[in-house]
Length: 196
Image 1: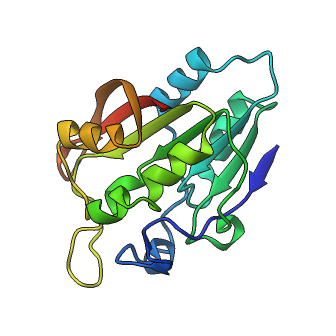
Image 2: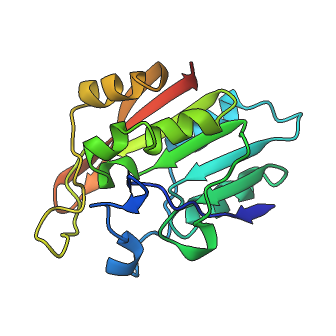
Image 3: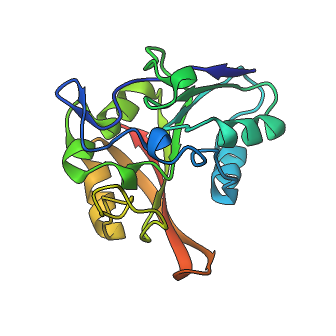
């Protein structure tokens, strides 16, 4: 059962939408979700399938990744949250068996990510334990209206891990690369963590 919930605080800047503009408005054909084999592998090995589970897709865009996962896990309740997509803009108040976020944090400035009301803090408060992040380490193909690359927060794996450790325990991490015609390859950092 795919729940459609949206939260309005990714990129929170003292209660206002900050530099992290409405990505879905600026790029209306984006945000449809992708299939992430490392996420699927993680969920299959780490989540007990003999219980009722609730997962949160944090920064879900239009819900494509959640819909893809629902095909593998039809009995899991997946809630989507994305402050810039109306069906999912309300930040959930429940806590979830797993919170995952894919290709989201690189679109949010580091200051906003590290804010005590920002996405890393929110995810750590919304999980009952596991957090799984996939962070793109390669420049985006898209450019913002002000000329900046849409990936406004490109950091090294070590910097991302240190930032995440401020909010939850990083258990394991690895990079995952796929071919990209523009950059040769697109590399993402996959982080498995648990709340402190």
